[in-house]
Length: 218
Image (cartoon, rainbow, N blue to C red; front, side, top):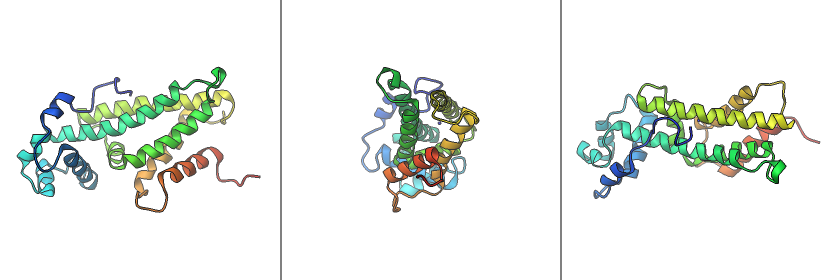
């Protein structure tokens, strides 16, 4: 799941977005939210601006008042998910180490897993869309590059925890990272915000499973 400064930007410019605000009726945020829903339901390539206009009951020109293109909607959604994930990983990586009075690498890794779950829940449509991109356009390629850099940061957190002696060393750090955060990513397939499991409970249970396993504890 690059820091906002790494690789091409996947979001619209602030000045361009600001210039399209203010039209009565649907605001830009509403247009974006409905667009993401349609992209997830039908697929990005199969959804046209005309489809979105019909869903909102407005003309295509009303859509273009807020955004310059369908690609801008995709870029904004992907940027939302990536920026939140990147901030969580950077917060863990920048935290003081235990040797300097901070937290251990394992504690930082656990906190990152839990926060990744909460981010997924808070930005579920955008994260779902992010996990479905395949690099079919420059916008998607930029998003995948940002994901690659985030994945490298996550693997580094795992390596740091293994170096502390608190994680198994017979498994590669990259494999552990892929399995743990692959589990987090799989939540988009079944988690429902209106269900009985709260985001905090979900985060706690995923983290417990990842680090404590399924065996009973004495």
